[in-house]
Image (cartoon, rainbow, N blue to C red; front, side, top):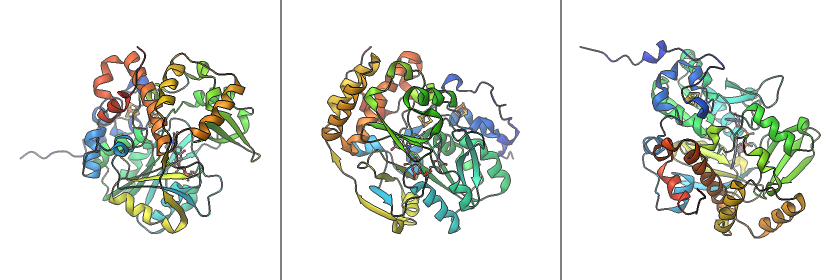
Amino acid sequence: MTTIDTNKHKKAKALKPGSVRPAKELCSECGLCDTYYIHYVKEACAFITQRIDELETSTHNRPRNLEDENELYFGVHQEMIAARKIQPIEGAQWTGIVSTIAIEMLNRGLVEGVVCVQNSKEDRFQPMPIIARTPEEILAAKVNKPTLSPNLSVLEQIEKSGMKRLLVIGVGCQIQALRAVEKKLGLEKLYVLGTPCVDNVTRAGLQKFLETTSRSPETVVSYEFMQDFRVHFKHEDGSEEKVPFFGLKTNVLKDIFAPSCMSCFDYVNSLADIVVGYMGAPFNWQWIVVRNDTGKEMLELVKDQLHTQPVMSKGDRKAAVQQGIEAYDKAVTLPMWVAKLMGVVIDKIGPQGLEYGKFSMDSHFTRNYLYVKRNHPEKLEDHVPEFAKRIVAQYKLPE
Ligand code: FAD
Ligand code: SF4
Ligand code: SF4
């Protein structure tokens, strides 16, 4: 009788830092290849084999309903709400819903550890993934590290620690690879708390973005591309700086986004149990997408700490998206006064709530579709998921 060796991966060798990854230039540095789980890279890497449709069905027990516009865009879900913490966590990216869910799960003994990402001592934007075992360690991971982050580099430690119940916080490309190796981690229960993610950059790319966009790059502590069509920078002294999207130096910034992120169609983190972002909510609210029963259980833990309201949708994004496609392709940068004016006009009459979320997805999916078509035409058919093809097909694209 032959027995199947389920631990074959342990003989595989992690890649050394700095060495070329199997996905080559498309690698998003998710961290999988820093571990012996590199053994599964061909089926796990989001840039080698795109498996969102299949993994959605196995994770949520049903496929995405492509005939329902909200599912087409935001993925399989039971519920979407807008929320804010009644007492926001100071220094969190938004109000700290992500950190709060993680802390509650640890405090109530639902999990023994939380995969999250702190920053290095020397650099507030240099990601340092950890398995947090205390609320303090989770809190120290609050706020976005707006750079590629090897969150899965701690996977070997999980198996070695003997942990059986785990929460992983991460973005779409990390979560696709995680779902693909989930059964090999030796866990009894895995919880996945996702955030949306788009336009990510290497640490060097981030520096260029800060230097070309902010009045004081060295004091920026966090920033967000907000629903009011401005980038909001928070500075060390507590001041806020707002720069209209339409005034960004598109010609300079075009090349800073990582090739992985220019080829990514998992903006909404389709394989997480619950997703916490902002782009489907009114200005200044966070947006929560509950995908399955596990996600529902996670939301229930913190509901008494939240103000909530139903999601809303207003405006019509389509004309603005179509104009944006052409302007971006020609790398048009508007003079700052026109950009400010346009920002104000669009803010007043433009898409809001779910419509804003769809505006952002349409703009990024059309741009990324063109990028893959031009740079990796051989990948286009298999790499772009069906839902993204349908979204892109609504627009006229340049050659
Ligand atoms: P906090 O309580 O501050 O916790 C933040 C958590 O994010 C921490 O647990 C940390 O471990 C984790 N984290 C930080 N950086 C990374 C990283 N690089 N990779 C993986 N995990 C990380 N939402 C939208 O709606 N639209 C967007 O376009 C959008 N873009 C994003 C781009 C990036 C690179 C990231 C990391 C997030 C993005 N989000 C986006 C999510 C949003 O900015 C907030 O992170 C989310 O709403 C949670 O806010 P919070 O206050 O609850 O999080
Ligand atoms: Fe490996 Fe992740 Fe890079 Fe793919 S994206 S090559 S799985 S490190
Ligand atoms: Fe990963 Fe996509 Fe985010 Fe890039 S944009 S870091 S590929 S989830």
